[in-house]
Structures are given as C-alpha cells and as structure tokens.
Image (cartoon, rainbow, N blue to C red; front, top):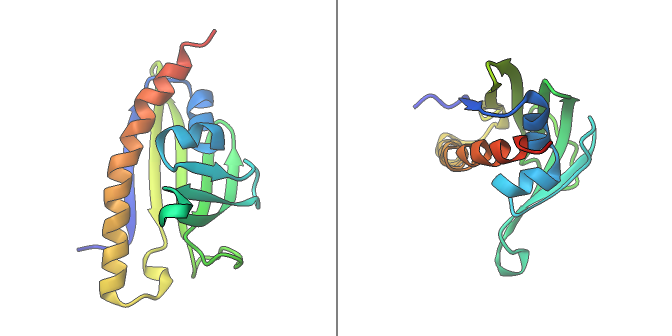
Length: 153
C-alpha cells in the first residue's frame, strides 16, 4: 500500500465563493465534517475541531490554518500534539483547491504528510487507512450541502 497522499476530486454545483465558505468557515464545516470547529479563517489561526461528545470519549484535534485565499485555496495542518506549533514533521496538511468549472466548481482535495510523521509502519498504515475511510465518508457530504447554499439570492 502506498502511504503518502490522499487525493480526491469532486464536482460541486455551486460557485467557488460558496464552496470556499463550505470548506473553510467553521459554521459550514460543522455541517459536513466534525461535530464542532473553532478557528478563524486566517493564515496562522490556531483552533480545534471536535469529533463526538468530549464527555463521552469524543476527540479534540488541533488545527492551524495555513492558507486562506478566497475563493481559490484553503489549507490547514492538523493532528499535531495540542500546545505544539503545527509543522511538517508533526502534522498532516489538508488542501482544498477550487476551480470554476461550467456552472459549478471542481474541488481538488489533498492530504499529505503521513510519511513525515516518522511513525513505525503499522501505526502509519493504520492512521492512513483511517483518514482514507474518513474522507471517503465526509467529503461526499459537502456536495449536497454546498448545492443547497447556492439557491440563496
């Protein structure tokens, strides 16, 4: 199994401006990915995303915005230890690149940095597979959500 980069492309029936909001603004991100998201949409902003109920074993994950160029690119680093600055060697980099396409937007998604974490092969393979499965579940959810936002006048 090649462990390095997760890549996906999605066509979304919404403008790049709408799709940028959906992949970057915590208010919208909560609708298709984590249960909660707290960060500013600005490079260098540190925050967190939450999966599940923290009182019942849910997970809080650190997140740092790397790039926010509306309506073209949004990227962040995540999974780094809480309290540490996100770097290439301690976090994964997620990037959304948006390109106008017909009446909608082509979203190119990548997640990189698995090999750079320096983990043993079994742990690395397990984390990589968890992320593949997670993105396979969550990314398709943003397509219908973004399309509903497009109808606004």
